[in-house]
Every structure is written in C-alpha cells, then in structure tokens.
Image 1 (spheres, rainbow, N blue to C red):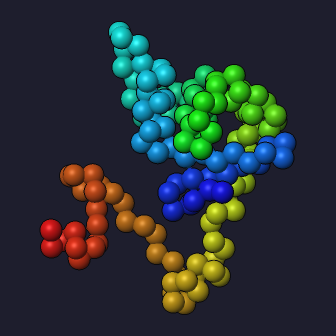
Image 2: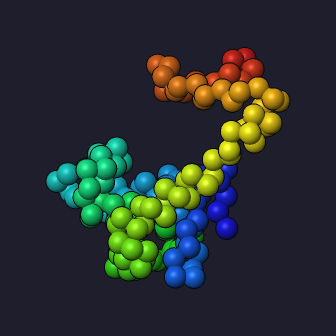
Length: 140
C-alpha cells in the first residue's frame, strides 16, 4: 500500500497493485539508465523529454518509480504494465485519476483548516532553494 507522506502512489492494473515513488534512489536509477560515458543526464532534462511525449523517457520514469517496491522489474515488464493499462494514454489517465483522488475535497480541506479557506503552499524560491516557516529552522 502506498504511503502518500513518502510520495508514493499505487495503481491497480489487471488485479495487481503497483506502488510507485520517485524518491532519490529512483532518480539515480533513471539518470544511470539514460547516461553514457560521453553524456550525463539529470532528472529535469529527462522529465522534460517525457513531458514532450518521449515514450522511452515515460517508460523510464515509470520503471524507475517501480524499483523501490518491485525490485528487479525490467523495462520490458514496465512496457507490459503500461500496455495492460491501456497504453500511454490509459496509464496517464490512471495516474491522473489517482492524483485527483488523493486531493481532499474543498469541504474537507476547509474543515481540516479550522473552518478557514485552505491556503496555498508557499513557493520554494529562496536563494538556497528551501523555504520554511518552522521556528526550529529559523533558530538554527
């Protein structure tokens, strides 16, 4: 079962549940997979290529995200999982539906926020790339 607090999501395909996460280990798997001695690839570039529709890069991201909970799954098996879910479009629909289902509805969010309208998260734009309102972080 997926642990949302750790950035995990689960998707069920043909009666089997797959848990995916793009943690640091997955990012390293992905970069290692696409990099060569002549050319290093970083995650943002690989994500951009996937966003432009590169099937190889989409499959690579799905494969890397499966490694923590489904060790040893191959690229070919990843292709079969994607195909079984309706191809790239079907798999994308499953992930989008899953992402939407993890968002609380507006009434629940309001209740969790003490009856106030939910506030958007603060942007992470400070020079160090990290922003925090924690008193511990401020005092450190």
